[in-house]
Image 1 (cartoon, rainbow, N blue to C red):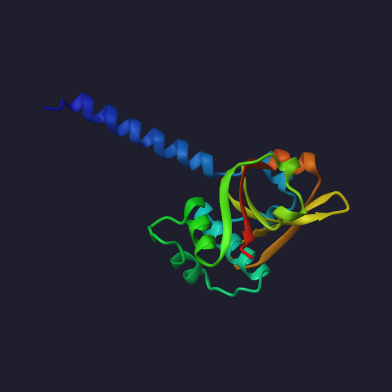
Image 2: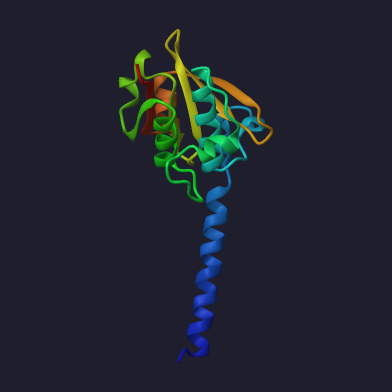
Length: 170
């Protein structure tokens, strides 16, 4: 049997958790200044940005898929399109693909395009390096691709050291 006091403490805990998660989603002013113009901050969640990044990686190799088709490519289609689902999707259409920790500075031309993840979980497509700057694509809620350039140190501060790397099978 649960007493009234225990029920109210559980409700408070749930409210505190909800407030915590709501505050985690908000972008601070410092993050906005790192990202540049705040109109380019994505409003998509990790799953949606990963779908866009995977779709654009495939289009780089001349393969056109809708977002729904990309979502349905993995061997096991689940409710969530996560990095392992993206690797499965890429493998299913003829790529050698893997996901894991990899130092940004070791990414070379043979690794591009690759998919990286920002600190807030957003998937980005890293297209290459031009004049010492990494060329990345972000995706917004209006299906607009936002191209940005970062030097190594700025991009290293922005992203986690986990990547999806894919190469077309020969």
